[in-house]
Image (cartoon, rainbow, N blue to C red; front, side):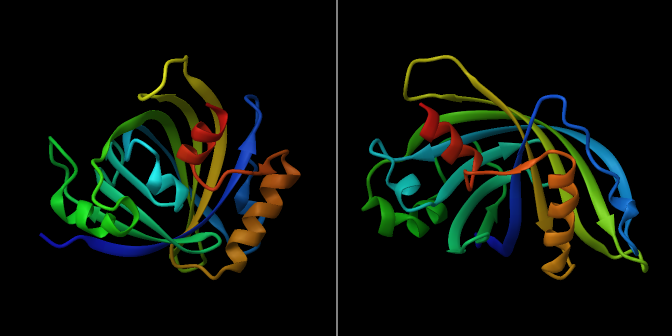
Length: 198
């Protein structure tokens, strides 16, 4: 079975618990579809010594939302990753995913290291012709390590991901988010944030 692939270009922002999403339709030519609510659950996998995380590679099994699947994210350049999907399956990491990360793991076993539960609210930014330019995900995250003792970590973040719009859409959406009080995230990924804090 061959994985499907696409490029993911996004920006992430931290927000306070009482953050109020700005009205993106104030931007000339933009309309907003949504919101749509999803409950996401993602189990992340790595080696015992976190070789995938060390190479900024993310491997997870996610349920909920519109892209429930095995996900593998490989960094290409700042803000852009190649994302590979395989259909959901139970049991160990699919062989195709294991083969694709072997250069980072050296063949070491992969096991669950973290569980992230996300309450996600999605809004789609559309252009004058109805084309979806970007998606804005408002995420309430509860995360915990599975390979360490300790309680969960909770935070609020916003993701803006390009769909078919130019890169200027990210900049314009980011301006509105910062004006509303959001701050550029210091972490490139949710898992990275959890690992840095535990």
